[in-house]
Amino acid sequence: MAHERMEGVATTCGCAAGDGEGGERRSIHVDAAIKDRNIKRLRRIEGQIRGLQRMVDDERYCADIMIQIASVQEALRAVGRELMRNHLKHCGSAAIRGSGEQAESMYDEIIDLMYRNVR
Image (cartoon, rainbow, N blue to C red):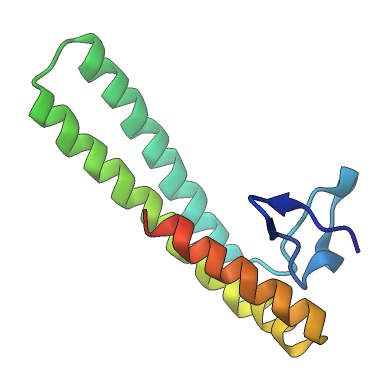
């Protein structure tokens, strides 16, 4: 199984069976309701970003723009939490129950994801 590298950390988890076309990795399971919620959130975020662009273009008050930026960041964190939960529930648990190498790779991936998302 080929491993992609990200800053020295293996990023291929135990759900590599979910590989898609061209080596693109795929989740082994995504709940339809969660996917729908995430898509709706991302579309709302897209609208918020367009609103931010208009605010900057209209030279709106900096503090108002900063408040909207914080709102977008929290919305993105909410999507990230849903994705992390799905990853742990499906890909993570499958890999950890798998071979020692799969489990170790997943532990590294989870730690890397946690550190990236606490910034």
